[in-house]
Amino acid sequence: PPELKGRIPLSPIPEDLDPRWTEESIARFQETARAFAEEADFEDFWAGNEKFYAMSEKALRESLEGHEITPWLQDIFGVKADAFAVIIGMQVGRGKYGLRRTREDGSAEFLSIIGASSPSPWRGVPRFDPSWLIRTVVHEFAHPFVNPIVDGNEELLKEVGEKLHAHLSEHLRRQGYPTWRHLWYEYLVRAGVLRYLHHNGGEERIPQLLEKNELQGCP
Image 1 (cartoon, helix red, strand yellow):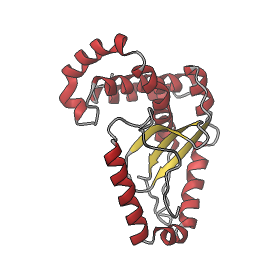
Image 2 (cartoon, one colour):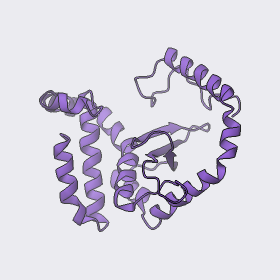
Image 3 (cartoon, helix red, strand yellow):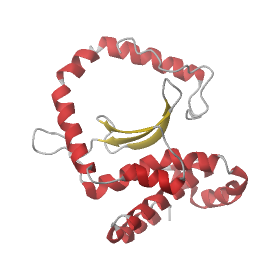
């Protein structure tokens, strides 16, 4: 800010950028984002809400306290990340995302974006109940570990993945899993969450989560 210049070059497109992006759509998005930020006086809006953001961040930190998520993930997958960050998605409702970004120095940062979907009656500040937050953060942080494993093992996974996806395609597409790759991403990430719960005192939640996964086509 305020120019919203890119932190790293996006032409040619970086290998770890979601393949749905194109150079044309990237340029269009950047232009539109800059125009919106200027027309909406976004910097003033941000400054006027800093106290609210700080209170939301404090609520998130308190719910995450005592849970050693990232060391466990790095140990189980045998991969070390340069940095981790949990981002509160103030405008994504119940949306949750996991991704990897390349920083200016070329290091990798793993991100878990958590929608602010549970405002409390107290000043409307989002609350993050550990009963769902912890497994969700594990799920989203697992994607940057799991997705490259799937992408690097296409010969082993594609045939079975295509058969499974064809059987469940309508169900999976409604959830935003349009290809066999997305099926494997979800299968392995959800298996990682179950393993985390098993290793970290959350065994009582596993049956309910297994049932939920099966209903969503991801047993």
